[in-house]
Amino acid sequence: MGKSIGVTKNLRAFTLVELLVVLAIFGVLIGIMFKGYFYVINQQAYKQAKVEIEALKLSVEDYRRSFGGYPICPQNVCTPGECLFLSLAGFHNERGTLEMPPYPATISTDLFGYDLNSYDISEVPDISHNDGKSLMFWLSKMLGKDVAFLDPWGNEYIYEYPLEEGGPGFRLFSAGPDGKTGKDWSADDVN
Image (cartoon, rainbow, N blue to C red; front, side, top):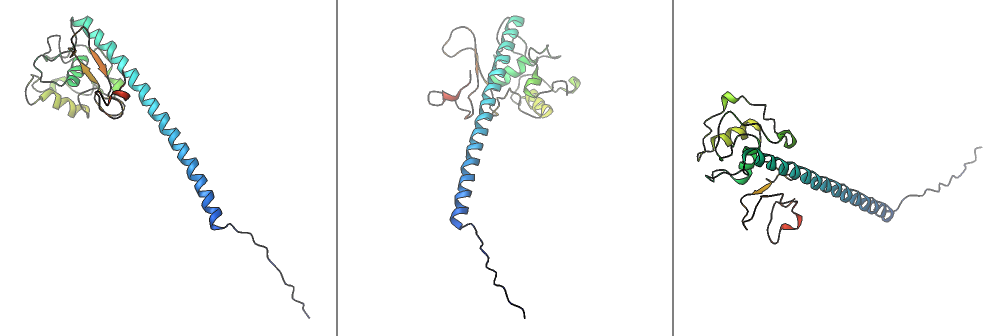
């Protein structure tokens, strides 16, 4: 009665080798995409560092015009980065000492993510230069980060005054992504 019809199925499937080739191609494309992405991010960090350095240099020059000298900590209690921050934020005066109330800031610290209006001046502890660095500790606690201007890679901008080789002016730069500077490490420094 019924005649059985033989159905032959012609199925075509991918072999394991073909699947591996497709995955390898995807891997190469994703690798190229990530390399390009990180290149763009790195270039943005360099541009941001250059903008921030220029803003800091202008602020240092404004400080010099206002106070008759570059930021300095004659007692060498502050690191150069702390001295730069405290001076430009209005805590250091032209003699390199700390006094309250703060002087007018010569830079908008908002550029670096600091809100100097977030604290109450009446709560400022003893602000003398001392080994405990009470002001720096208090400010870092209040601001939630180090008392220094940090580059896009999280390293402190390097401020040199007076210059080691003598001469007029100051030097301000970033050590770049590796955070190191010097003879063998200066290739990625940002001036």
